Image (cartoon, rainbow, N blue to C red; front, side, top):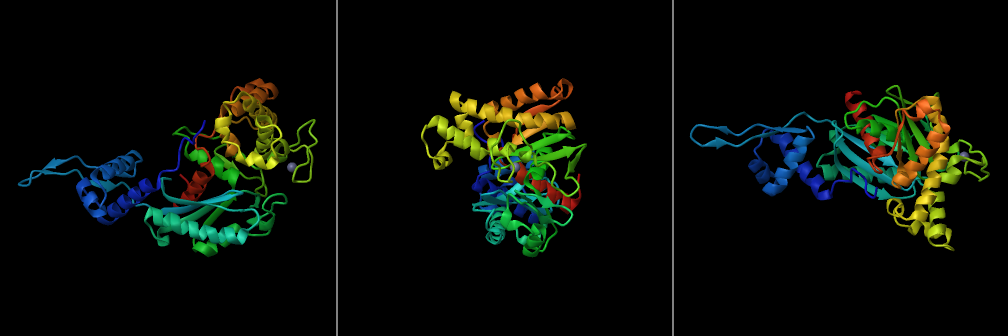
Length: 394
Ligand SMILES: [Zn+2]
């Protein structure tokens, strides 16, 4: 897999879409010609945007009808529903994305900035406000239109207190209440969860109409964490810190982990470690810094030596996931995060270990695949959480 299955829509397409939503919201029923006149967009741009809106269930179109005197009345396009809008954030370790979406989950505008999220919480919150303004401008709506806000953060959030509690990641965020901070910025109800939980929500929301009740979403990136969807509900645990599979111990590994233990899964199979090994294999003698210059993992996966390195990481992650499969009997394991972009060599490695170490009856029941949302599961999950807060869960 070299590109996300759901690439970010182009800025022009988002602007066109926002313009259509705005005029239809204001005028009600409009013919395509009237939309073109009111927005200044070409007939063909209007036509393709109308088709998109109809495909997504956001708009409908009456059939053309004969009228007395003036020939045929053109078909009219109308919005199918009044839409409440939501604001969603995906905070990663090195990026923040803000998205404005409607209650169907369709993203109408978004903006991303790359910055050091872990070490600069104040700057990150300021950036969140700026990005929200940019996403709102792209969607063509004011902040007043937003009904609810949700965010995924790349660290552990104690659900008893809403405070970040992460000894090894987000150290500068410890003791902060991100929901309260974002609530002050936007004066709206705010839902915050960890990124893997949001990833699981995103996968459920974009499961293509199949009911998914038991799914493990693995965000395999700088850290490795799991979002657990069990019996149809997100499982957070007693204090909200479930799914920390990156710190499960592997046998025969003595590598130091940033948590202070040795032999943790993420100390040997994080994207940082995989890139370091890839740099060594593909360019012997490369300095560790050069790992950042490697091509995307999806491109490297076609190189036999790189596929071996990625496959080994897959087998290592699969060793831990096999225990989860034994314990929880999930229907699906979805691999997201940057490592998920490696595709087949990674998934095959995970499958090999799950088949080897999980009981046959549970191993054969679980589908293991890379996320079809590329790196966007967490963002879509935050949209889903914000929609649930705005209109209630579906
Ligand atoms: Zn650890």
